[in-house]
Image (cartoon, rainbow, N blue to C red; front, side, top):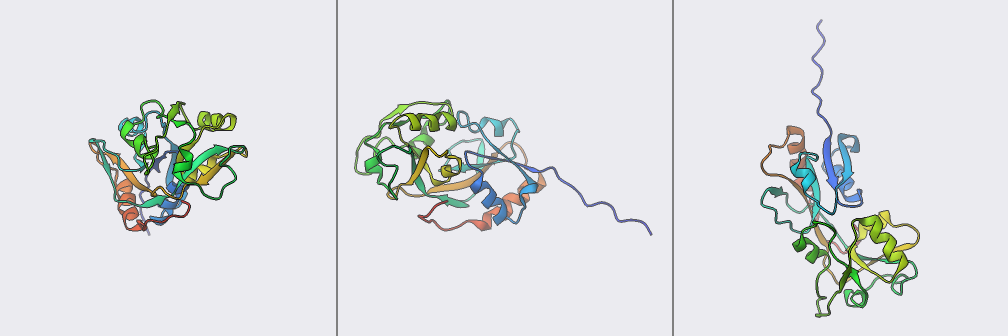
Length: 217
């Protein structure tokens, strides 16, 4: 009796994420995929979409509403709550939660490299909801440099709660209660057909979208 043909195999999904892989893993799990079905890797925050355009990734995890004409995005799959990154000796470090109005008293970070200005304005707005200016005076080229600077100074970085996964002991990630949570989507390159297994993942991830929440990501 002839043996059945082998089941078709696909290369893993090349899945890029911006900082912590936590949310990418949650999206994979919600789509019914084990982590061995994907190669998870961080993408360069100084130029976040170039690797996708060069076909080094199949799909990216993106935050806020990207406006890149050559990229396609899914519906909202996840929400991440806001937080501020500070050194352990910072005046805000011991708080359970802070207001963005308090964060504005300290110098923040400008966008790294070629990070799109419109997206950075979402992450680190020019002004608080009450109109207080946020001074974006520090400029670094990545998360490691940012973390080192907040340890050494009173600098603050407005970000998302999942950065706590990367924080060393000398850093605190404090929830910011008066900024809305960040929408999280998948993005892929418009001018290249998705491989079938990647398209199936995107389709499976879509029903996993969750309602907005204020807790940690």
